[in-house]
Image 1 (cartoon, rainbow, N blue to C red):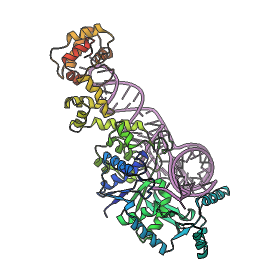
Image 2: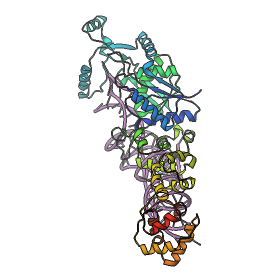
Image 3: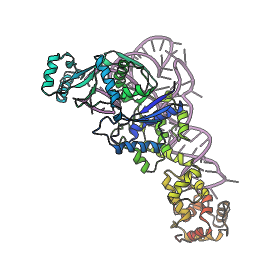
Image 4: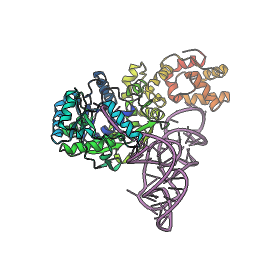
Length: 444
RNA sequence: GCGCCCUUCGUCUAUCGGUUAGGACCCCAGAUUUUCAAUCUGGUAAGAGGGGUUCGACUCCCCUAGGGCGUGCCA
């Protein structure tokens, strides 16, 4: 059986760390299995969905490298949902209800105050034809609920193992709104059947839904897919991800200068038994992914880890890959430069600072000009990759300075910073003229 | 309120009744025959609490505490 999965975001906002996990996990699983990945835009709510967000979602996925094999808009598939609706009606699994939202709210509050679970009482099921006609005559339009069988629905979850949901303890889900709009549940199942989705992979916030949806699959005469419910992410302090980090969008991370592979590596490996580090590629991620490596409790998303992983991606990036981006930043100073500085980058844009050290003007940090003058006097006429070692040895000999006292003043004078890449290659890249002037205390 | 799920080093996790409780990140130390960083090596550090079951429990059961999710004419 060929694996086929789907990611079904609503275009009511941009993708963020909270919901991108579903996309990434689905994608790496599908690719690892040689399967298909379907992008299904859940735009049945025409009020809240926008084309801008839809485009934004595609932009985000594409930037992350999460390509799709099929793409659908649910708004273009209403005939299929009507078909499913008729089928459920014909089986008496879909029944019209006339309560208003206020009435339902009130009823829930009463149940809660009595210590009862707020479950729909199915009053509408007992309505006679005359009563229904009377309500319709009043101008009331029905919303439609799916009649649950009220049994223990069981499945073997790829992450959580044997699971069961008692649908007797939940309200019959509303499938169609008073205004005729389809809610998420029915289109989701109808599409999963129609598209031949083999695995439904989503957050654990959907486990209860799974009970109801499996009943709908059965009612529509379709086999149920395999389910996998991964744990949700929480913030670094264990707080729910909704508010602060949920709003940390892929777009923001991108604008902050994060690498797509860092984001996908972090999100795919967080909460698994794989080391939380940069993958070589998305294919590498896909190859190492397995559901049985996933933990069952919420994992903490810490931006500090993302920075570290981002640095890891940069440390391994070859010049060919970096070159166009270096060029864009006006920081393409050749392969030797890139190889010398990449180890010190956290964000790609950090490279511009180092490019200035090599190709631009730097104001030296001078504490002891006499020492620097002495060092400058020992600087050879020609500088190459071997110069640094020989030169510093000579300076040590002449001044008696060693260790930090020897190197730090030279680093600060030559780069204007107290930290940075290895000085050997850097000195060669800076060149004799700039080096000499900086040692003399000049901005050069 | 009710229901479901979860709880091992600071963090992510391994362990599926008998282990010196392992790994990765962070942190600390050493090395790179002298610098910050990077890199390499080493080290510190854990079974929420309380009851059972058992010759023996991190592992099975119960209670408590803590956390997540659900309980929508949201997805």
